[in-house]
Image (cartoon, rainbow, N blue to C red):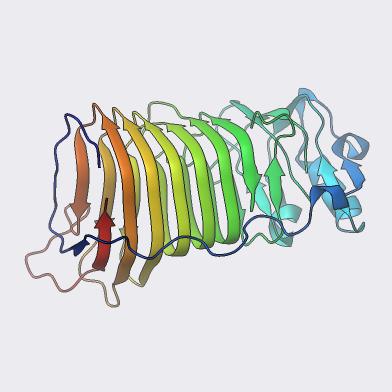
Length: 326
């Protein structure tokens, strides 16, 4: 690990630092199982009441196009043409059905993004209102792709070629993802805390070629998570890469994180958990390889008493084992 001018900081935690690479990373294929070439019917939101005027809420048009065209037509894709759109309410039909939900923000903010596959062309979306604060949340998606056709923005869960800017909370959250690929994502956050770049849990994941500039965690591994490769990540002025925070029933295993560059971050890597869990769980078989740090405060921060949670009468916490640094 190359970390010029950084400090190695350890919290109260027990680790086995091994010389050999821990077994981790995704297995087999990831991303959508249906090729874009098979999606021949275009369900255009402009045909379902959508307007690219940055003042008409496009949520109803997207819901209608999805419900009345995508769901009823095999080999279809939802298409949002280039333009400026306002998203003021949640996409409830899409959420109930299977895929994704852009979370509206408190103020109109630029979100040059793309759309869906089931897919969209590039568009600029401006969101208003509030709903949990997160910019994009994808839950329990299957054979799903969100992308920008001009590669200025993405998801392949799949997400790819997307730019997210100024979300008031976490920018991208993947919950219970399976066989997902996230790549070529750029995130620019405001100078605020609680603005994580990507938070993810699930199994068999490939997350790569990500750049995050924020004041909180860059890419955060959550529980449960297994068999994932996270690589070619650039963290700028962020809290750094992280695992956690973890408590009861934590289950993280077989993870490879490699080729990470951190510039002016608080930590290059942080692992955090709480003590006194009834069934605290584990983190095992995790490999960190080829990290480069430039002008960061700390290199490695490990803390099993996150948020000053020590009581003086602590029982066992999350068990860390077979954690490798190369």
